[in-house]
Figure 1 (tube, rainbow, N blue to C red):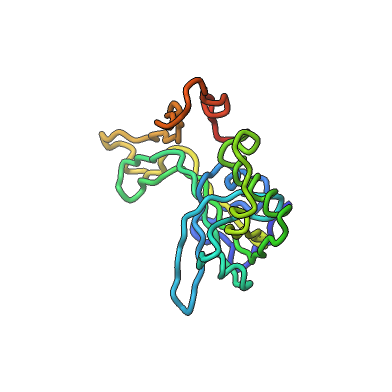
Figure 2 (figure 1 turned 45 degrees about the vertical axis):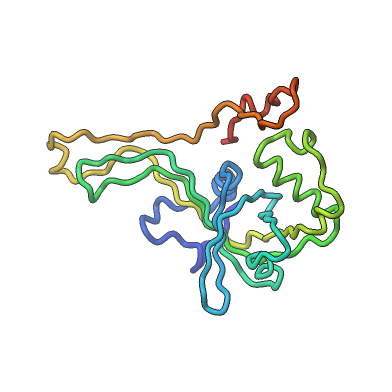
Length: 217
């Protein structure tokens, strides 16, 4: 299913790189660990980096009750969310045509506060599992006090688009004869070996889902 192309989500610069299908967009959302949420208060724009998770057609965010962003969402105001995955540095023969290979998504929507403990726990589980599958069952569950101190919101993804660049440089025809190396330097996010807490009790091994940590793609 595709998102309808409209004024706010249409890719204008190099439109052939634009994608509007949920499969492409949601794959980017699900792989990324961090999103950036844009909103405006009294004419002042803000951008806040935060962790996220997707539940169906909603994006889950959480934070302290005093969060300006979450209060903005609770009041029913719209937000825009940007997510970018860097796949490579594109080294062209000219500075002008140098670029990056990337997968990015921009989402638009309004949100709601999850009021019931059941909804909040399900959303917090999704957030935890988004970071590391298997962690929710492994870690201590939130107490009533912790749950009460946390605001969790679900943003309906009303509109979205993705923009993707792949492949080698696109140089000007006359530049291909230049004696300059050109190509792509792949870039990957890679997890290292788990580092134990200095206060970790002896005999507790790192769980397999951290030892063999991989982002879904």
